[in-house]
Length: 266
Image (cartoon, rainbow, N blue to C red):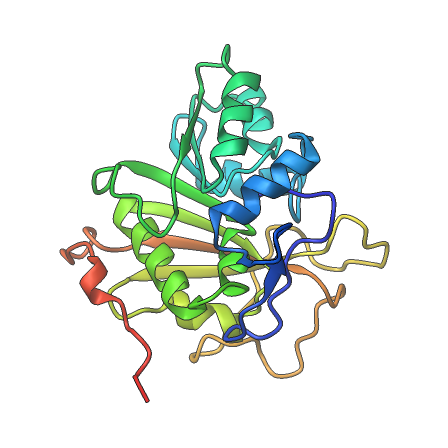
């Protein structure tokens, strides 16, 4: 995903937000048509949501060595994968729901063998076999799904697919606006077994004083919440969840779509 305009900001995880198409129809952030139209309008101009690689490099280098096979979900027109190749990463598979941006990126990087671009919906990545990646990275895709229709189901589908594709001990690095009260319930689905460590990054435009170091983890309560009274220096900080997959390390099998905890029908 990409845009020179502000990314979707899900203030209410259960509330769907939609945008209007040129023909008057409403398109949600989870629909390919919305992103196709947006990328056509923007002409494929590069844009990194939330953070550039230089800010995220400490996390990526710490939790995913350059030899790792990386899955970049909702890649859009971001420069992050290119920057990672420059930094020594050897295999990054980039997926996006928009066929328009995927074709643009394929043409742009046709001579970079470390980068592969595939049109795919993160809620159904059945093209990939189980346990085929060492690390998955998302900055903004889950947030977009949380602004679309059927948000809880879409989020569950995405998290389960990422979990399925990671090798035992693999890492999911999630960069989001969602604080633990609205993200941990999705990460802590009963079918998943993550060891989650939380970090907080100020926005690139934040000019206030930061007292924490980048790799200082933020403690969570037993319920997976921020401690009482904890306030980030930047009130609009990005939350970085580093989720280590424990399935396989303890003998637990990978989840399937049948494990999705669907909301009760009323």
